[in-house]
Amino acid sequence: MIVVGGGPAGFMAAITAAELGVKSVQVLESTSKPLEKVRLSGGGRCNVTNACSDIRDLVTNYPRGSRPLLSPFSRFATKDVFEWFTARGVDLVEESDGRIFPASNTSSTVVECLKSCAKKAGVLIQTKKLVTSLKSLGSDGFLLSCKDSDSFVAKKVLLSTGGHPIGRKLALEIGHSIVKPVPSLFSFTLDTSFFKECSGIALKDIGLKLYIDKKKYHQSGPLLITHWGFSGPAILKLSAFAARDLYSNKYFARLLVNWSGMNLEKLKSLISLFRLEKAKNTLASAALLPQLPKRLWLALLKQVEISGSTRWAEFSNQYEKKLIHILASSSYNVIGRGPFGEEFVTAGGVNLSEINFSTMESLLCPGLYFAGEVLDIDGVTGGFNFQHCWTSGWIVGKAIAN
Ligand SMILES: Cc1cc2nc3c(=O)[nH]c(=O)nc-3n(C[C@H](O)[C@H](O)[C@H](O)COP(=O)(O)OP(=O)(O)OC[C@H]3O[C@@H](n4cnc5c(N)ncnc54)[C@H](O)[C@@H]3O)c2cc1C
Image 1 (cartoon, protein in one colour):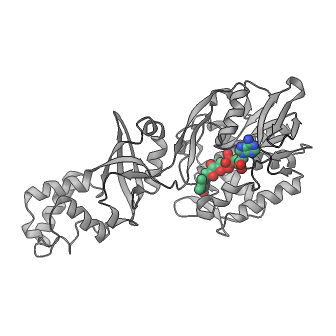
Image 2 (cartoon, protein in one colour):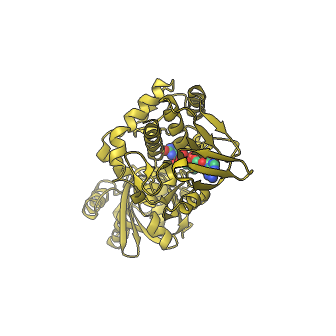
Image 3 (tube, helix red, strand yellow):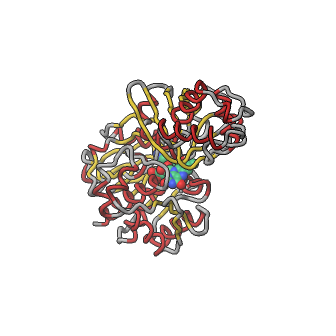
């Protein structure tokens, strides 16, 4: 068995196959550093998986691939990953939002576990082997050629090349179709410098609506204000579900933000209450929404074009309408992707209709398997991207061993 690509999906497949008795398992990795993305992941902490254990809930975290993943997850899902790592000496801890990290708080624990399990099971890892060509030899298996002119023959081949274009090229050459790759999980750049002074503010639960042409997406959750616009889990989720439409529209869209978490009626009665009970206080000193940090409250007042030194007693109806509108439904123009992807992944890849999901084997080319990001599957943030790598890799290892 030859695994092309030494990432999490490739390692999980290689270890599973070797542990189950497959005699010769080799991983060909183009760089000198296998599992580099695992090392960098989760800000160096590696968000291994998520606590979400209900499979129907779990699949809702995959903008692409949710239905086909139902069957693989019924065999190896989040709990199984938890047990797999725990049994191999990696203690894992769940955070309050369901994300699961190594108790050591460093990704190197996960990297070292995968490397040592591979070594123990007899997997041969070859680095600096960029596979540039893959040819089917019919019943004799496959011929793989590398950039350094080395070549290999294997009965079974797994392509687990992640989002790298060369992996998609190998799949294409062997007859697979590719769903056009586009970026997913990115922050938004806005056309206003308005938020510069609020940069760094993190909010727990903000309602968002994204309009791209006639299409509408909505999401709520934590939001982070940055120098260039907005980021944080709710924005990254929006970017994932809207990835294709945003790409088609050159990343121009309209974003409505509900800063208040209330509807217009509730805001109206809250303002009436403040006029009575906080009449002598200024707008700056008595913020309408205590959950908003003062810096943001003052910036929103600036957007209403009213001075913070105005007293609530003097707050006129003309401003009331404007304030309600801004707190419940501020409109901003998205003009591009943010400069840094927190957990950048590729949406698109090998067409899922050409894969047998009970083995992850190609329906077009027997003996060829796929796992991980090379497929047209991607998840939102929270450990879901690694989860489908562990699952698809494990299924390939099992299938080849069988
Ligand atoms: C900064 C960052 C942080 C992230 N954090 C998280 C997180 O905390 N949790 C989470 O779930 N997801 C996270 N992700 C997403 C996650 O890293 C990917 O979804 C995952 O690594 C995909 O695994 P893979 O095995 O499919 O591919 P990869 O990890 O990309 O591995 C593919 C490997 O194949 C090699 N390769 C490619 N082409 C060839 C070739 N032709 N020949 C030989 N080798 C080849 C590559 O060098 C690479 O080592 C993060 C992503 C980024 C960029």
